[in-house]
Length: 425
Image (cartoon, rainbow, N blue to C red):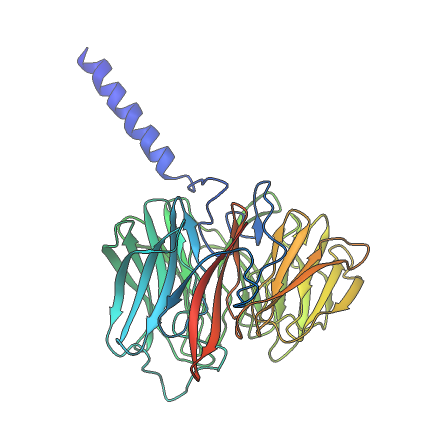
């Protein structure tokens, strides 16, 4: 009996260990990290978010709720169950914090201070005007929420409980401001992974998501770069892909060991790469404008490269084609195999926010708050609608459960006021 009991305990512990090693799974109505559950900017499930909305005094339409936010931030919200999580930096309070909102009505559930003090101290260089002190999107494993912040000349990853308690904090590395900081964390199996490329020498770090203990560190070149690390299943295995610093890099996400690395990117990249299962697609804007298709099998082959400027907004992949919004306000569709441009269409304004794919519709918001909705069709450009909200949008919309969650700036009383909107029918 004793032996059978002990054997049962061993089997139970092994089962727990196996479960713990798996990447968490989520409901279709959750949005657990930057670019959604599939890390590709796709809204999952059958849903039908509005194509028309307005917050004007005389013509309000499809605004479920809006809540004011302190100061300024460019990170996107994430969704877990009936909660919304968003990073905020408030210079008036000298604090950077995570806010938790009720998903149904936008009411504040709690806020957790992550850093307090002079968080904006820099190495004598002010960030780009498109940057903010809260430009990262949180990530969750379903039990805690992870946030990246630049704070007083360094970058930290922190874990906050679902009740708003600060659980642990890990310093990634010192950080020298060049344009700003906006790399978001990602979750893989028992790890949370974060990066901090910068001119002082960056690092990519895999941390135990329960304890914050560093499992591995990978040194990066002394170059400014802003892309978020992303785990993609490509060429038959899970690979942690980083672009920028003049490299396209593939790491084993569990160990940080290099799978392969080639000179297939420019120095400064912002976009999070996507895959068609064979290639990973790098794009950047300094010093070179480029999109490249890197064969992700370790062969070092670059299938094609073009000099198109997709510097900040990340791309989308659907059915063998890349869909993108160029920084300069042009929508494009490109064949993944050849790099051939299928079509181009002028939208308008400049773009920082990344497009989001919902079924066969793409939602793309420019910096002035105009959202263009168009068909993800490789044959031709088809506009579905346009909507104006506020005066300033740098954040990427989160779309789930038929609703759109969008961080918007509006000029009110001669100053900018930021809001988080929930748009839905």
